[in-house]
Image 1 (cartoon, rainbow, N blue to C red):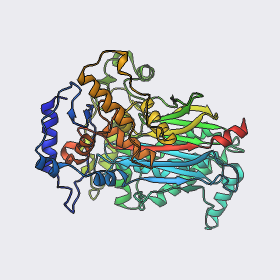
Image 2: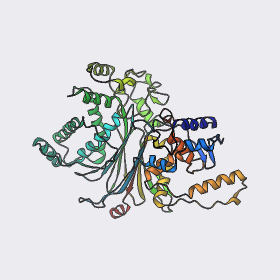
Image 3: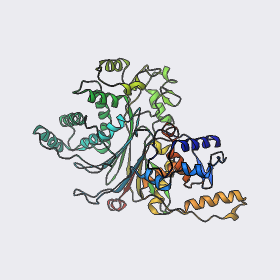
Image 4: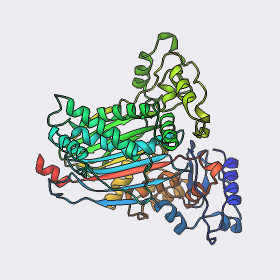
Length: 519
């Protein structure tokens, strides 16, 4: 990014936001900054090294968010939950988890979920990144963990659920949810969701092989596939109200990636479809931190994924299935929930849309009412998750789940280092030795800024907030740049999504003592 562009961004933000003394807040919105900024405390620097023109002192005061305002914005959606070591059924593999979200789109298209399985063992964590709106991510975040938990339940447990439903008695709780104050549900569709979840467990009851329930990897895989099928079917059938039908159509035509982890006393199972990511933080014997990927991004940078996709279509489509690093030139993730215009036949899409009653609002489908180019052999998209298992070791300290908005701004290794240092309270590096090589004054200044940055204590008790702060505010030398962070948070709605995406991060702290006991 050139210095002139940086300057224009700051000036635009200055003209579009209020001073720190104003009682109103700038609105936060929309999408992804593909460029990385680097800046030192003394001035904003682009990657080229050019220093942008500073605003005047008065302009700077008018534009800059204060540190208190920055922290208030970053912490607005924080969540921190401590898990009892013994929950009445067994020891927990999770000590606590911390989570946070920062919106760029309005409304935020990311969702997150966390719950303890009450009828089986373990905890479930999910991060969901919506596209084409938030509708699909919202539905998946409400429903997917139920499908996983039900699939793991025994025949006897499912029989009890069904008996309670038949007798119109309260159903035993399946999950203990950990909701944030900003979370909400599709209340109008709740009965529809319960009805289809019941059909799911009835089919499991009819299966002679269900017995003690599915293993976590089988449950995860089957839950992903079954929920996506239900989303597709719900958009094709009549409903009791226009609102429910409209919601079902919106959910099916929008899309969402998903990364879900089941954390048990023996290990972690991860199911991933799309470009969210799961990374394990490992503390080595020497105290250093290393990142162990537990998922792979399903996008055009994944050669194996490209090969899988091309193998599913005729050779004549080899050059059109992926165009400009997108599925049919449109969609970046190559696996997702919803997105039925990449799954349904053209005849089915036309039939469903033509069958809608005139009272149903279709404005939200404007982006989807055209045929993707070279749509010759659907389906082009699937939600089948890629499964990973990791047996827990004493050195495995935490798990990070994040949407692609986080990974666009930092590597897995950077994220693990930041959380590891946050956990251990270490923010210093070895002393700088200027005698190792000849340094000019400029190089010495750079090293000093870097040293000073690493010596700063963390500003956030919540590790997920710590990650988001660094994702948006890290400068060229690893320091936190207040000016960069303020400018990224103060960007007006029509500009913000050009420079950053919605960001969701969940950090799950593992019970290392329990792992040692089981080894």
